[in-house]
Length: 196
Image (cartoon, rainbow, N blue to C red; front, side, top):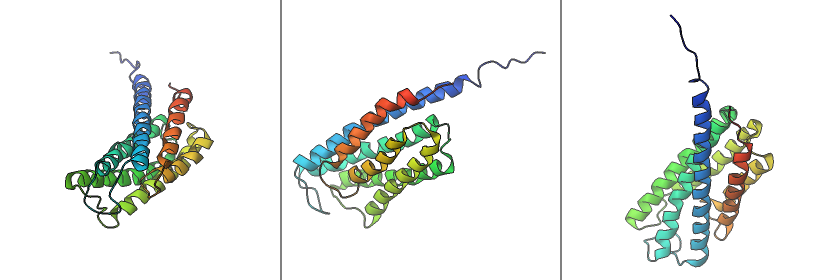
C-alpha cells in the first residue's frame, strides 16, 4: 500500500495567490475608474444639495458611482489578506472586517438611494458607515505594515487618500488622489507578490 504525497499542498497555495493578485488588480482598476467617475460627477454635474429627492442626472450618477467604489474596497481587502498570507495578523483581520461592514452598509445605502431616488443617509448611518471604512482602512494598513507586501510609504498614503477621496464629505477632486494611489498600487503589487 503506497500513499502519494504529491503537489496538492503546494499547487493550491500558488493558485490561490495568483487568483488573489488578479482579483486585487481588478479591484484596483474598478476602484480607480469609480474614483475618476466620482470626481467628474462632483466637479461637473449638477446635484441636489444635502438630503432630498433626486432632481438631476448627477444625483443618480453620484450615488451609482459609490457602489463600485465600495465593492472594489471589499475585493481589494480580501485579496490583499490572501496575498499577505494572513501575515497582517489580527490587526489586518479586524481592519478588513470594520472596513467591510462599512462598505457593505454604504453599498446598501447607495442601492436604496437609487431605487428611492433620494440622497437620504438614513439618519447617522451614512456617516457611521463612512467612518467605519476610514477606521478599517487605517487599521488594515497598520496590520499590513509588518506583512511587507506593500511599500510602507504606500501604506501611509493609502489611509490619507481614502480619508480625502472616500465617502466622507470632502467635495472636489480628492477622489483623483485615491485613483492615482490605486494605479500606483496596481503597478507595485505584481512586482512585490511572490508565489511559492
